[in-house]
Figure 1 (tube, rainbow, N blue to C red):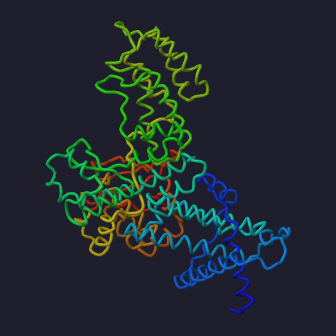
Figure 2 (cartoon, one colour; figure 1 turned 120 degrees about the horizontal axis):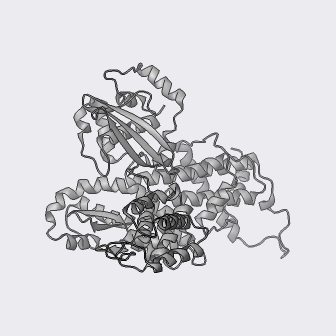
Figure 3 (spheres, rainbow, N blue to C red; figure 1 turned 135 degrees about the vertical axis):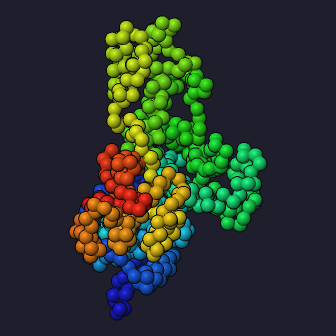
Length: 558
């Protein structure tokens, strides 16, 4: 590289550190980036030697920028800067390419760091990392910028998205606190932090069940043991066990008695409430209260007033409608539906009817006030329909009318029945061990389980099949394909060719799917998985028993 070209690049890099904008909300950051979104066409992947050399250039540029900014003014005047400043200079193709390389290298280094911290190699398959990857791809697709300042601001915004999403939950938690201004925190930031913990829960369930099992015999009093686990100085058990307990607490979980005589863990919602209670919306406060275990009823009696019940219903409706992509959306819908049913029909020890089964006049007036107070609410439509049917029954709350309440709830607020929360990608540590061993041996006993969390044998096989597709391990996908009676499976070469031509986007499916349902037919010989996406759409995958082991039917998901 000649001196003139090197000097020009040093100036460009120095400029990239000037006038960095401060964005106080993740929602604003994402908004700015989305303004320029276009379909992704290419990916510039840096090799490790180039990344290493580029880090060195950035370091030199940082030192150079510091020196330049701290040197005294040599102009000899106090005149204001010229209108034609560096920030307003045209942006060249070389400037854009330099920024793209910087962002791509930054993203890949952060992915490497997260893989090391979590101890897995497939962190890019997590939905939260995919968000950052998409922001990088959108940036790489930009072909022009009006000014140097626009390029710098865009670069800085994408970096902040990478910092937030390609990080451990506790790191994101601290970043959220550090980038907020005027003591304000957006609900979206907090919800995304919670979603990240939900995504990682399966991984820690896998590790927890493996390491906690040998220590189960230590527990004499489960309540006291849970308190001990949550204390800052827990030190009972093996070194790996103690380290895992401390890591899980640091990440953002808390240990609980699951009510079945065993210890489990959940997200530490109290930590979130204490940090942001005065800044978050009423809707989010309610959600956190519910998740922390606040009850509305006990022994078939309300423990809150009916007015408070009304407020919770409206707030839950707001959360569900505002956050349709929320990972734990079905749990919110369940809370909403339970409250609506209680509000309209009462409880055995908090009845809304007299001795003849007639709904009290006070409660009827309550319904009318609800309709007047929330005319644009989806819940108001439910209350109106219920009152209409109630009048048809001469205001008598019949068993049939109680059953019909569920049918009044619209699809966007209704619980998805029989669905089980699921992650498709990445695989857990246990599944990866089975994946690698099964590919070598095809020993069906390896698929016998048990598996951590909600994973059945069929679901594990399906997930391994999808992992094989997304990693282009077509040999393993072929091994997991049903080849028993009635199968018409081509050769491995033809199979591979068909999959490539199909252009399946398994990663996109994994990003969107939130729940799974399944149906068994032919005495359990066949099973059909229905994967339910966050928008309600579904995808199907069929499996069939081969020598007692479920395998994916040929062309399933094609």
